[in-house]
Image (cartoon, rainbow, N blue to C red; front, side, top):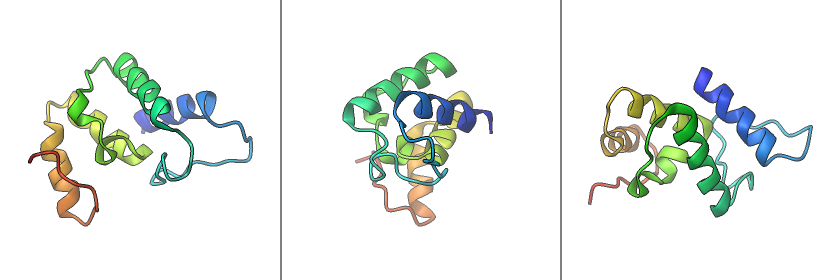
Length: 103
């Protein structure tokens, strides 16, 4: 879970100011108030730089970036050449309430 560890460390250093706060892997970063819209842009820049991938504008959706688990799946998919739209559909198909970006 190297991806989750790296992203969690970035989030803790950049956005969390409460030493007692523990971010669960499936917690929504936006709903928990961990990051806001500006924070999402900072997170995207970190992901692009750290994992040497490009996050396209249409890929900046909750299904890809709203939790540590989603980020892990998204980054792994990008590194393995899986198109994010396909991944989002698969997640939606197993019970996620996220919307697909293929419309």
